[in-house]
Image (cartoon, rainbow, N blue to C red):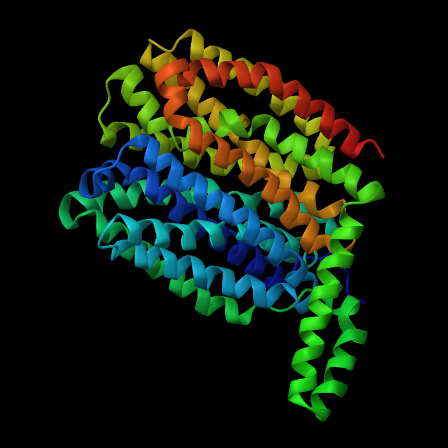
Length: 421
């Protein structure tokens, strides 16, 4: 008799595919920040405008997520899973051929707006496909695509821009993206979703045999009804309760996290007088440490539970941020704190996909995951838009310190309410 909790080669293949897809999305988003100085010089704009462009991309990602979730619940995870990466790849490649500021903004909106929907779709299809016993560390691997993509983006910019120019970084990034798009053709629809949609698919077949026009109208009408019914369910009762808690949890540490990752090169440059090459190297090394942190956090969460994992990782993260601020004028001591934070503070993302997928039924899981990730992108958008103001008037170090001390306990409380049942 087949053991339903046994890992198969397909489970490992799907884990790798979701990891690489999220890595490509993160790589595209991170490239923009690493290439930032070159692009700002080429198109004559400042860091504040860079933040506005990124913030606008996140706001578009929120809108995109609202649409993608119900489509994923209605038409399936696989089709959305594939086309999102196609859009990201087109946006990345097009960014490399931008001829003026306006074209650059348009292409970045396409890339960023679609890239962040990848997180919810990948997590949903993985949670519904892999055995529950192994879900913790497997989800951690998928989530680790983010720091892996960030590290890869840093490596690309370090070695391609001095020789080939900033456009080459975008072109090089599309090569692995295209390969992954081809590999994704072999991804299967999750069994859990198949069971949910058998009756609906039978109605599709019946209508399609009669008339394509009737079939098309039926699809449009069903999608409209699905959007309304799904979000009515997600935003009511226990589902609304879980949605609010997940959003509170995520945004309670996204402030310090985003500043320590994407804006770290600019922050470290001002604090230690580094050039961009040196700060990028530090972020790359920190991101590689984060890969281990993501997977470790996911594994610990799978064995000891999400709340106990937060009880370990969150307080340690606060102490490390205090350490970095206290020794922020001593480079070696700062780096010790930064790399340890990359494991503990950044590693917390290894359990987040489970929070916004497992708490919701299959029929609304796609929309719930997309909605909760959208709330996270709102936090990122706010940070990007106000990044220049923070740098000039408050200081990154102070904001990171205040946000962690004030908000990390809120995240811990939210995780307790989410997991106490």
